[in-house]
Each structure stands twice: as C-alpha cells, then as structure tokens.
Image (cartoon, rainbow, N blue to C red):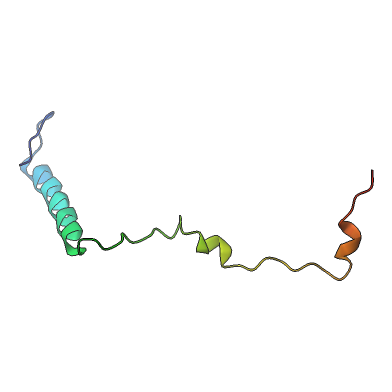
Length: 68
C-alpha cells in the first residue's frame, strides 16, 4: 500500500511514482535469493590492483638509502 503523507500529487505524478516502485520491486525479485549482490565497479578493489606495480630501474638501489 502506498500512502501520500504530504502534498497533493496529480494522477500522473502518482502513476510515475508507482511505476518506479513496481520496477524496483520487480528487479529485486528477479535476483535469486542468496545470490550475492552485483558489485559496483567503483568500489571494486581489483580496479586499483589491475595495474601492475612499477618496477624499479637499474640504478634504484642508489636511492634506497638517504644518509643522515
């Protein structure tokens, strides 16, 4: 049941809101229970680790110690 708490929506606005709610409910029921939620690619740690770590150059050992 949907209840309008505040305001006076037009029938078109109410139909649009109901369409969004029904579409979200249909999308949620399409996922089988117990299935993991799809990961957002923005928060996926493999996005950062996909690039390799830069390799040190031939004279990098000379920059590994800073005296004093």
